Image (cartoon, rainbow, N blue to C red; front, side, top):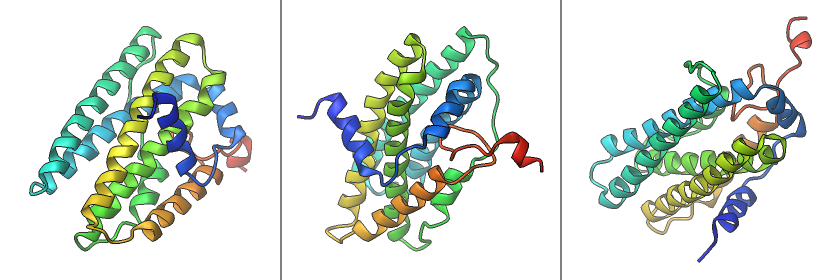
Length: 212
């Protein structure tokens, strides 16, 4: 059985591009923004799992696994919100980022292809979260390091759940081409300059350059 660290490494290796160093440096300087966006990401992740549960009620195995996943995502939201409170940072909603939208734009509209694609997107997002936690650890204070190291292991399990469900519901059909499609989109979105900074953003555009 894989250890937590092995799971995290496997999730990161699943991806096709590493987080740019410029994004890590921006995160080091913008911890409050990072934490606020991270809290919103956890809340949205719980909502994604719940939405799938409400839409696809005929899949018992999916319902049970996503129910557990949604509870854990909500717990993560509570934990990040607690960190914000401890640090005197006000929690606010943030605008939708291009990352999730960019992935969802490629989701097919007919069933069961739509469900399979949504599950693949879930796996890619969770894998990217794992990778972000890993690259952030060296630039965080000790309290956040411990917190994010623990979250990385949970996100790795979520990655495994989504990917396993995608394969199961594909009923033996090869979905590697679809996985590759979403991995390529992820790689582009997290390496290309981004006008906004967030947990899943690309390297932020220099602010001076953005206004010229």
